[in-house]
Length: 606
View 1 (spheres, rainbow, N blue to C red):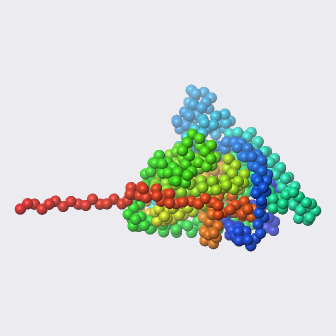
View 2: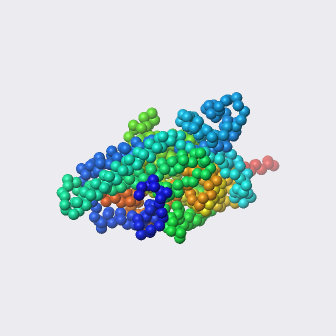
View 3: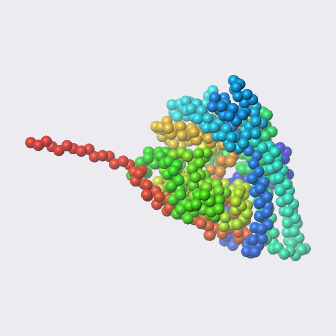
């Protein structure tokens, strides 16, 4: 049964192999125990010789090259917020790009009727349309919703309409090519896997003598399995795009392919109806428990900072400018020996990295292909700068560098596609060290927020986009626990909610969708990683270095250790002393102001 036949799937027959992959956090304990057994010698490894490791890499490399070439095929899944094009500015930009049949006409063009014209635009022009519409959407939503914040700070969305959103595929022909290419490569890999299975069975029965060892055959079978799983994940992504293409003529009735989301991100336990929820109660319960930690931190935060002589208002103020952020992060990269001094030669600088201010970004991020750490073009608090920019993102860079030493093509190819469901280590490791840095620098933890899961719970109960914005915003508000939250802070929370709720609808143009399903559950990773890392740190601290690699999941790490391809003891470690030294240099700027002593006039002369 292939992944493209998802409409024929049933969710019954529990005695059969599970239809969907399990969410990574649910099997973490078992996988970690397996890893410990391999490391302790309780379970026998199948160690490859150096020559066999080279043979395995050479075996995998051409398939990864093919997969990378297919992955590069771009079909341009595009989202545009349509209200912008009812404005004069929006109409003028359409006229500029020649979408008016006659520039002198005096009517409003309906952008939803001109997908064919939008496809003719060059990428730069289309990106301008997308960015302009997104900016307008954010500003108008913020203005509208801020007027609906009631006295207790909550959001009243009664009577408000969801914004309009158009999604289309810019290059349908490329989408077709990509789907067909993925299917062809999958058939090729499955044929080779079947041949290896047959060979292995002959060896097991003693009917054939081979040049290759059992360990090498098993390692190749494992790598083929991981390539096929990754390929299925990419195929599911393209089939989501195909559903958008098929609905272009009537986007308001687009129904996301929820089974494809389950294939990409996994499922929880089977529910009482015999079906698998996209997100089950286990994660929702976790989301309900986390606010207590946030509330406790927020209640004590000011006292903790005051005891250190620090001013909470200065610490939390969005006062650090992008250029200064760049200086700080570059200093930390330099301390690690990872800063690329030659900014004109980034892609050829081996393991060196550069920083760049990017107005299109709303958060810190890295691009492993270009080796650039992107900084949003907006002021940030010193907490964000030091814990997110100078620690979280640097951990992602260390993960990439560590993974490069393993040499397995799927994880080290320049495209850095990584394996399936690999977010656990990447986000888990980065969030863990971000939390450690927050505690060391400022004295309080930085746990992940429950806000995504709160919004997902509303969506899975039949909520639309505005209901998810409300859920995300009010969840953010509840964990602040401040009686006098300023208007500016409420607006910042609301702006974040507008953006983050939009991510849940990233795979559908229908923001009115009230189906009891979630268009995209990708962002469960922020809570799932917490569960995985807590399991490691609490019950398996000797495996802590496992969070310092990227592109793989626990099953992959277990098998790499089994074949002697991953040595946890050789991985490069983070050094929080670099960011601590940086904080010490600037700490005085965030001290409480010392009151100016009142001067007492001298007594009058008698």
